[in-house]
Amino acid sequence: MKKPHVTLGSMAVFGLLALAPGAAGAQTLHGPYLAVGGGYDDMPDRDLSINGFGVSSQWKPGLGVFAAFGYRLSPNLRLELEGSGREAKVKAFNDVNPWAGKQWDNSVMANVLWDFNIKGLPITPYVGGGLGATWIIWGDNFRATRQNPPTIYDADSWRGGWQGIVGVSYAVSPKIAVAVDARYHGAFGDYKFPGSVAGRVINQFNPETRSVFVSARYSFGS
Image (tube, rainbow, N blue to C red):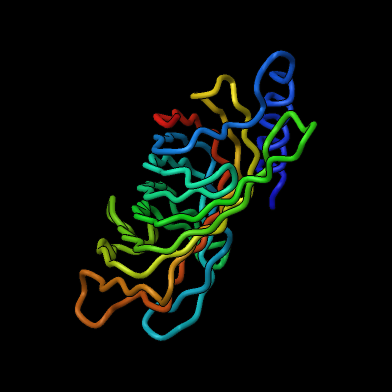
């Protein structure tokens, strides 16, 4: 995890700990709940192929958001249906060749999460994972800026998706909890983006992102 992730995550955890006096600490109401959140998202260098030549792509950090409908089956086990969106701007290929354009990552995930309700601990750690579908879109004239005229690689495609989640939550009240978590998110298989010039194509691209999200959760349970 890069330094910005560590800094943001640490600040959020300290913030949860600061809420400790006089609050419940764990949210254990059984039944449905809603969660919304967002925060920092970053994609490390990703390998891909342009017209059969392998290159490395570099990306600027972006933002992500999510909303989830969940159900708590027990004090520990939660199930969720989550929709999320992430945005990133391309920076360069092979660290030196400037590119322009954006990537949008829209995903739907079915998550399973496990809360560790540890007696005496003011926060509740949790871990989880999800499987679903990821829709990757390249747009805003995705291109090499030095090429004139440029080949545009605006396109989109679906693949199966996955994510891993590690976080902590804090119950402000029996029904309201706040949380911070780190998420590692990616897709099964490679994406292909045909260019605006016949025969030119970018393929063998497999996105993976690392996020730090802050969220709020409201329980309708009893």
